[in-house]
Length: 376
Ligand SMILES: Cc1cc2nc3c(=O)[nH]c(=O)nc-3n(C[C@H](O)[C@H](O)[C@H](O)COP(=O)(O)OP(=O)(O)OC[C@H]3O[C@@H](n4cnc5c(N)ncnc54)[C@H](O)[C@@H]3O)c2cc1C
Image (cartoon, rainbow, N blue to C red):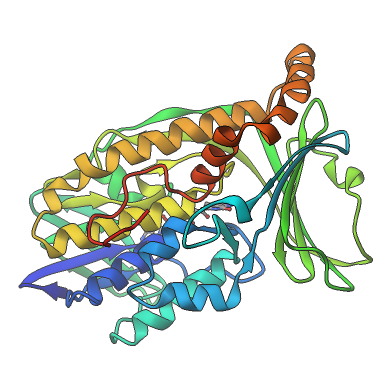
């Protein structure tokens, strides 16, 4: 079992949250054990979380991961909003005063591989294809049964159990954490397309179809992601170059849920295990990495019991904002959609509104990490 100051730490899940947690612990001299049901990191072609925000880069600077991300990621220079193809708002990220650009673009699988690279330097490799199949004991003394693909079973009793095991978290369910909230009616669809030549990857565009929306996001130099509330959205895409192939598609319903407390006794939750919301605002992976960095800091200070009270306000802020953004994107009432198109161009002329939007995108609307001097 992984150890630091004599305490054994078991992390369930090796997504961005579990990996960031193990790394932040390791660089402070705390060795953890990391197990994951998945056979490996997220495949590169499943682009998933594309936005790495400025707060995440600030948090991952000390481990050296940010430098690796910046060497691979694409800088986002503009956020555009249009309606029926007519431009309503263009926000230039250059106007945002911060050490880092609000959002850099890198596929989730790439970010996970960079975390893994730095983690391996501490001699920590996740135990892939290892599933938590049963949890017993209580929150003071959790007992975990691990099952390997060859059928072998192991029971462990960690001093600290951290559930970074995603939205369907076995740890959360086993230890009675309520996960309150709701799913919204609409379905969302996405498709990634690879083109025969490089395309403009400097901007994100949301085009209101009234009703519905079609989003265009960069993935890498020759691939774009389209995201929509309209099932027939692919017929409405104005491809910027000859399509080579669709590389990934997915369909999902959006839920807004969070736990009421992120720890009970010696059991802690982080990332999607503790909160889920819509991808509007690109916060999911970033918020999970932020949880991980806070928890590692607090463990290293012997203050892990402060984790929930320090993180819950940030979680509630992000859930509230993404809920509001999703409702705004998803407006159906024709009077309200018309009003939205009339009012949005004003954003170009109200610096406080555009700054608030960019601050949000940068992830700087939650408390800054106290262990990083001058962090925004
Ligand atoms: C289409 C899509 C687009 C998205 N876009 C963005 C975006 O632009 N920006 C953003 O920030 N976020 C985005 N997200 C959200 C982001 O992908 C998630 O928030 C992020 O992956 C959460 O990380 P996590 O480590 O908490 O959980 P996960 O990535 O879900 O990892 C969970 C880990 O737990 C393991 N596990 C699960 N159950 C068990 C078990 N019983 N035993 C052992 N291990 C287990 C899994 O194998 C995995 O290793 C998007 C998500 C989707 C689906």
